[in-house]
Image (cartoon, rainbow, N blue to C red; front, side, top):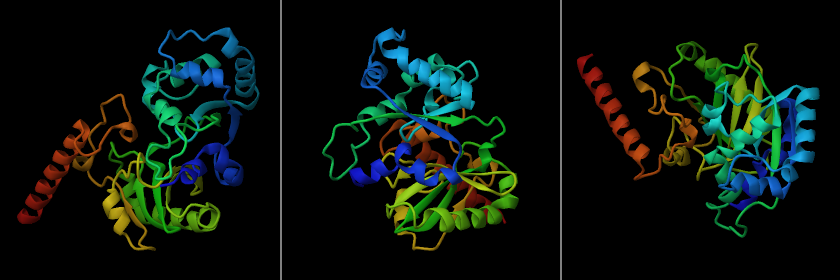
Length: 294
């Protein structure tokens, strides 16, 4: 992975080109004083020198455009949703936004470690940061969000995004969803996104429209969810495999944690990595037992 590939996944870079197939987003550049505030270990109280002009700008956007969800750069602070009164990322004020961002561990990655896995790393951190306000939809269904994997500019795999739940409806819609997402990729993404290898998240609406949510780099800190990076590297172009949680016992660990699966450290040797390894071994044992019984 190279720095330019990470940069292409920043929302301010890709959104202008793909806004017609994404959700409504308004992007504001963050002043350096606010970035330093987010990294500070001091009290939560936001100094007036930091908040004045920016508070007016953000709250004006929220009020006039009815924008209530936010992403920083290319990641949303999902790991801090627990601290919000609603338990979600929905915000109606600048103070609520600041609280979520200040409480997010994933935000520290964006601010300080975005280039750590780059083979050509030359910067300690991006020179500029942006806050993206995205329209809030209370009716979004988590089972209709998917992570897609593009390798050598071909769609090779699709994974259910929320891997900590079993949704029976996906069993009957699996083939149709695979076709819808593949057609969306060919029509809107394949020839327009410059990287050869990358991932992108999409949402499928009730009427069958596909909406682009986000881009992420291939490998490194991006989780492969229902796959492993090793098998994704081995997939041949055009295979377009789709995987969903197809039974209750296949649900991934982490459903009761305050940290979303996407932000768990599942690397080899980590605590959660060991949990997942044992869970996979148990699932294989149960599967072999069932086959033997059949």
